[in-house]
Structure formats: C-alpha cells, structure tokens
Image (tube, rainbow over all chains, first blue to last red):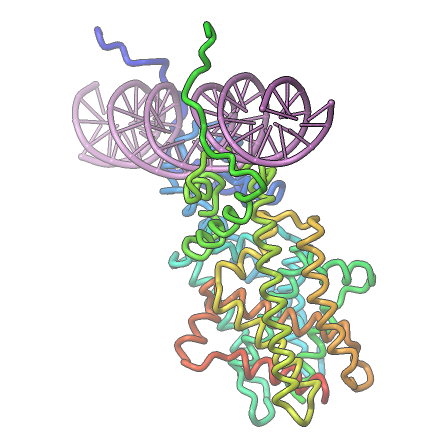
Length: 210
Length: 210
DNA sequence: AAACTTTAATTGACACTGTCAATATATCTG
DNA sequence: CAGATATATTGACAGTGTCAATTAAAGTTT
C-alpha cells in the first residue's frame, strides 16, 4: 500500500465496443459543424464524455478515425446515388441511359452541395488512409458503377466508356470542389442565381452521345 | 543592473524586410518537399535560421504566410498559361480559338501534375485566406482570361461562354484533383499508360464548338 | 554627432494537439 | 467464484500557433 497509485479510479468501460459507434457519431456531428480540422481525437472524446485517450482503444490514431468516418460517408453517398438511379428508371420512358447518367451526376453534385464538410473530407488525402480497404473498396465500387452505366450506353465511334467516365466524374467533382471552395465559380454561380451544373451536365452528356 | 534581464542578447535584425522573401522561399521549398502540412511557422523559421517568433513580424499568422505563398504560385501559374496561349497562337494556323483553349487547359493540367503540392495548396481553403485581395485578384484574373478566350469563340446557339468556362475549368480541376488524390481515376489512368486528359479536353472542346 | 523613434529580432510562456506508457477496473470466460 | 481480456484512466512528452515582454539594430530628427 506504500505505493498508493497517483489518483482516483476511472469509471466506465462499458464493454462490447459500445464506444466505437458513439465516437463515429460524435465525429460526424463535429465534422458537419466545424469541419474536418475540428475533428480531433480529444474533442471527440470530450463530446462523448470519456477521457482523451479512450478512443485509442477503437482507433489506432486520428487518421484511422477519420478514415472510418469517410468510409461511412462514402457508403451514404453510394446509397443516395443508387436511389437516384432507381428513381430515374421509374420516371423515364425514353433515353433511359442518359437519364440514369444524369441522375447519377446530379446526385453526386447534390450530395456535395448539401454536405460540404462531408464531401470535402472524402477527398482529404492528407487526413485519410487511402490504402484502407473499406474506403478504397467503396470508392472503386462507385466508379465501377458509373463505368457500368456508360458501358451499356451506345457510344459513337471514337468514344470509349472509360474516358467518358473519367470526364463526367471530373466535371462533377471539379464543379463541386470549386463551389465549396468559394472560388470565382462559386461567386459567379451564386450571383447569377441559377446554378450552372445542370446545364453543364446536360451539355456533357448530350455531346457524349452525339 | 539589479534587474539583469533573463538572457543573452539577440543578433540579427537585418532591417529592410529582408527576411520576408527568405521566409517565402523556404516555405516554397518545404511545400514541395513535404506538403502544405509541413509548412509550419516554426519549421520555416528553423530553415531560415531565425527564432520561432521572428516570422510574426512579416506574417500575422500561418494562414497569412501560406496565403502569400499561394498568391505567388498562382501568379506563376498565370504566367505559364499566358506563355502557353502565346505559343499556341504562333504554332497554329487554323482553328486558332480552339487551339488556344486547348493550350490553356493543357497548361493548367500540366502545372497540377508537375507540382502536386503547389497545386493542392492553391485550393486548400482551410489553410488560405480566401478574402485576401492579392490571391483573389490573381484567381479572378485567370478566370476572366478564360472567359475572354471563350467569348471571342463562335459558339453554337444555346451555349454560353460562362457555362463553357465553368465546365472546362471544372473538368480540368476535377481531373487533376483526383489524379493527385490517388483515386480510382489515378489508378486507372496510370495503369492504362496513356493519360486521359488530352482526349478528355479535346472531346469537350469539340463538343462545345459542335 | 547625439538623441530619439521605429522596426524587427529574441526568449519565454500558455493552451492545444497526437501519441505513448503505466495503471486500474469492468466485463467476459472458464 | 477466479482469472483473463478488453477498455478506460491519468500522466507525460514533443510539437504546434500565438501572445507578451524584452532587447538590439537601423532609420530619423534635431
């Protein structure tokens, strides 16, 4: 008893990995409210009412916490896009392929504009572990999905699905990124009242199918 | 004499704002070598052989240091793009407008792929002061330049220069961003050997002018 | 030239971060 | 019930940005 340890006992190891989802939920809230930079291990721990080192049992480091969160968000996005595809199929009679691609692209842009911080996090390579299988898997699957849509589409000679997929995704991603960054595009687009992405996407797809 | 102040005297206030450009150069080197996150005030100060608080006399905070650096980089980019435009004019006889636009877009992509960390910094809104007049001015000027090129171009009915400008820039920016992020696009593009951006840009501009 | 002012550098401190180590405890397994 | 395991705790360390107080040098005025 001579070596009475420094201080009072801790209290709540609520077994069963119960903390992990709570941490992720808190991280998501923090992300939406103050951006990825504010999602620190210690802030999340505080929000959950646990000590600053408690998260270490569930996430090796900050990167791994953010990676897990990003994987969740990517799954959300994928779900939203699948839903958009399904709806397009229901509502459209002619030109189904183009309608589905339009829905796909519009859903991507809509997600980005609706959840700026979430969208930004998805591409913050410095904060994420790009080698993570869950994250990479979800991303690749989404890209494969787009490629699939483009492959069934009858493309004019000289145009291949891969280039078209890269182009469409680049177009959407570039647009959203710049809108969220508050660049000239964002300013011009807001001032002019009518967001430009729908016309942009429509033009691109019209040109693609000639 | 009773109050002999804490410690030894400092040495080099080399008057005349001489430190400022040195700090910026060190920051640029650090950026290229280890990315924007490694460009800390203290690291830059160390690289310049001054104390950790010396930079405060030239830059109010880290954000303002990075903003100044980004403004320099944007000016570099603008210069490279002007040069590309001039060269395109010299080398081309027919379809000058499209050739110039191609050169513009290719130069943007080339800069991004050649200087990944510099390009990334340009869009790191969290690290930069987007309200900074120097930075915003250079960016706006570049966009205005593109718009100018598109305005002199004879566009088919139903297509306006602004949408075309936003689209072209989004396409390039999205492509470079994803290439630099190491996403599926980067993987597919590297595996396939032939980078896809030239075909992408050509397709876009061909469709634009119908 | 001498005295004063301004600019820019110094050290030191504070709060915050991620991460590690040592410790204690609640729950699960036998 | 006893032991093992997973989990949470406190504490410490190095690193960061930023502030304050101090001091030296350069420029300016008289």
